[in-house]
Length: 393
Ligand code: HEM
Image: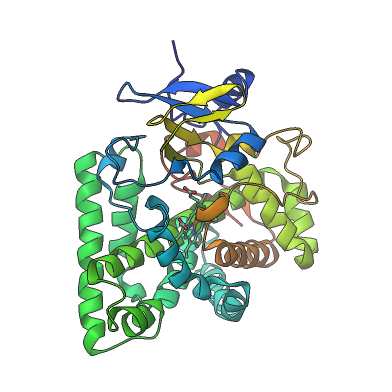
C-alpha cells in the first residue's frame, strides 16, 4: 500500500513524521493522492533542486493532467505566475520583479517597522497582559504591508483575509474555495474599475498606468495577478510570523540570542524559514519523461516537492531537527528554487526580521498561555501554521 499524500504535521514546527519513512525509500517515493491517483514525492535535497530547474516539469495548472492535491485546489483559481509556464510566466514575472528588489524592499523597511511597533504598542497600551497574536500581530502586519504595496485599502482586510482562509485551508470544499476565489477576483475587478477614475498610490495603479492602458495587460489578467499577490503576500508571511514566535517561545535560548543581536536577525530568519518550511506543497506535472535517481518520471506523472523534507536533509544541514539561529541556513528551499522562486522573498525576510526582533525586545516577558499540543496543526495541503497563538506577558 502506498502512503497517502499530503501528510499532516503532528507538531506545528516539525515536518510530518511520515516524511522520514518516505526518505527511507530514497530521494523519490511513490505516494497516493486522495482521488486515487499516484504521484512522486521528492524528499532529496539535490533531486528537489534538480527538478525545480528542469523545464520538463510543468506548473501549468490549466493542463487537464495537472494533479489535485486536495479538493479545494481543483477550484481555487490561483493561476497567475505560480500556475504558469514560460513564455507567459516570464512576461508576468518581468513585469513584477522591479517592485520586489532588495533596494525597493529596503525603502519599505521604515514603514514596516512603524506597522510592527504600532501593533506592539497597541498590545502594551491595552492594559491586558494576554492576547491571541494571530489576529493581533501575525496577520495584521503582513496584511497592512501588502495593502500599502499594492494600493488596496486595509479597511477591507476582514473580507480578503476570510476569503483567503476559505481558499487555502485544506478542509475547504471545492465549492467554498471556488466561491472565495470568485469573490476575490470580483473585488479586484471593482478595485481596478475605481482606480481607472481615481488612481491610488501602489502597484495596482502602476500596472494600470504602465501595462493596462497601453494594452499590454488585460483586465482579467491584472485582477488575477493582484489577487495572487495579495493572497501570497499576507497568508504565508502571517503563518511564518505566528509559527516563528511559537517556535522561539519553545526554544527560549534561541529567542534570547535573537533579542541580544539585531544584526543576527537575518541569519535567524533564514534558519526559521528552513526549519518551518510553511509553504510545503510545491507541485508540478511531467511534460515529458525524466530520468532521475534511478527512476523514470513518466510524461503526465504528478510530482510533489515537499521542501520541508529537503530542508531537513542531514548532509546539507547537520543536525537538521535542531533549531540553531547561528547556523548558515542559506541554501534552504523554503522559497522554492528555479524560475518560480518566491518573488516576495525579500519583502517576507524584511517583515520577519523586523517583526520577530521588535517583539523579542519590546515584550521580553512573552510566554505561551497554553501548551503547544493544544494549539493544533493545519491539515496537510494548507500553508502550514497555527490558527491561534495565545500568549501572556
Ligand atoms: C515567508 C513567506 C513566504 C513563503 C514561505 C513563500 C514561499 C513561496 C514558495 C515556496 C514559492 C514557490 C512556489 C512554486 O515553485 O511552486 C513562492 C512563490 C511565489 N511567492 Fe512566495 N512566499 C512567501 C511570501 C511571499 C510574499 C510576501 C509575496 C508577495 C508579496 C509572495 C509572492 C509569491 C509569488 C508571486 C510567487 C510565484 C512566483 C513565480 O511563480 O514566479 N510570497 N513563494
